[in-house]
Image (tube, rainbow, N blue to C red; front, top):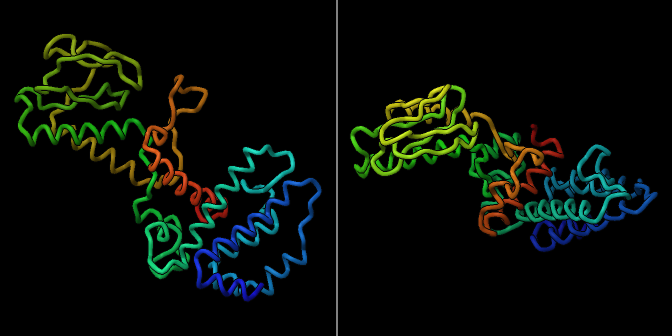
Length: 293
C-alpha cells in the first residue's frame, strides 16, 4: 500500500484511480450497521499519513481519512442507509470531481483547473477564500437580476454613446423609483418612447407617450447619463465587495414563477458542465471548512 501511494506522486491516472478506490470503499457505509474499521483508520491516520500528504496534499489526506470514516455526522457527505439512490449519486459525483482536481497536482502541465485547488507552487493555499477570490471562477454567473440589468444598461448605453446614435434629448438613464433599483434605458434615439412592467415591483415603467414619462407614485427617476453610470458603477462595485462563490438564487422555489430556473441552466451544455465541476469543488471545500459562508 505504501508503494502504491508513492506511485500516486508520479502518475495522475494512478492518483485518480486510488482516490476512486477510497470513494468506492466509502460506499460501504450505505449498508445498515456498518462500523468504521478502526484498524484501517489507524493505518491511514498514523502509519501512512506523511506519504498520503506528500502524494495528495493535506486536503487529499483529509478527504481519504473522511472517506474511510464516513465523514462527520453533520457533513453533507455523511452516508446513511435510508438515503435514496439520487442522494447517494450526488455525493459520489461531487467526490469524484474533487478526486479529479486532486489528481491535477501530478499533471505535467499546470492547468487552470489545477489552480482552483492549488497555488502556483502546487501547494494548498493558506486561505482558500482569498485564493479563489483572486481568479475568475469558470461556471459562475451573477445571479442578482438588478446587477445583471445594470451591467447590461451600462454596456448598451456606453456603446450607443460611442456610436453617436443617442439623440441629444435622450442622454438619460432611468430608475423605476426611489423604492425600486431597476435601471433601464430606451432604444432607438434614447428618448422615452415605450412602456413596460418592472420585473421587480411589477409597476408600469416607461413612457405614457413620446418623451412623456408615465405619471405614478412613487415617480420614475430620470438621470443624466453620467450620473446614472456613476450610480451603476457604485452599485456594481459594492456588489463585488462581497465574495460570492456558490449558488445565490434571489427567489426560492416556492416564490419563483412557473418554468423559471437558475440562470446557469439557460447556458450551453459546456458551461453547465464546467459549472458542475466548479461547484462540486466549492461544495467540498465548504463542507471541509476551507470556505465559510
